[in-house]
Amino acid sequence: MAILSTGMIAFFVFVLVVLVGGIFLQIFLSKRESRWPGLFLPLLTFLWSLLGPLNVMDTGSVSQNVLMVLVTLLVGNIPTLVLLAVYWAVREKRRVKDQIDKMKIDEL
Image 1 (cartoon, helix red, strand yellow):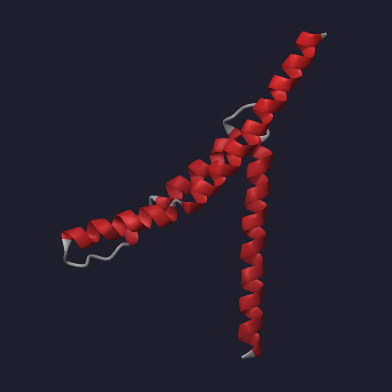
Image 2: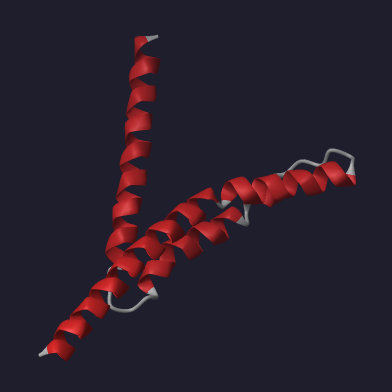
């Protein structure tokens, strides 16, 4: 039982490190001069989420199948929405900083 607990803890620590590393990578890419590197990870997670509906099992009812596909797409795109929120926050901060720099140059 202790081995299972240690393995589970190690797995959760690994997942946490990957998630935090992904957020820091998104922040780093979003700070770049060009806007395209910051959109790479959200695009990657979006494309990955499109694979989710391929794993939905047929329930026999069309309405249930459509609902399952929509829920799968919605839940699968949560990481995409988080990464896009980070992207927009960093780019907005950069935009404000650029405007302040322009104002300082105009004052001189």
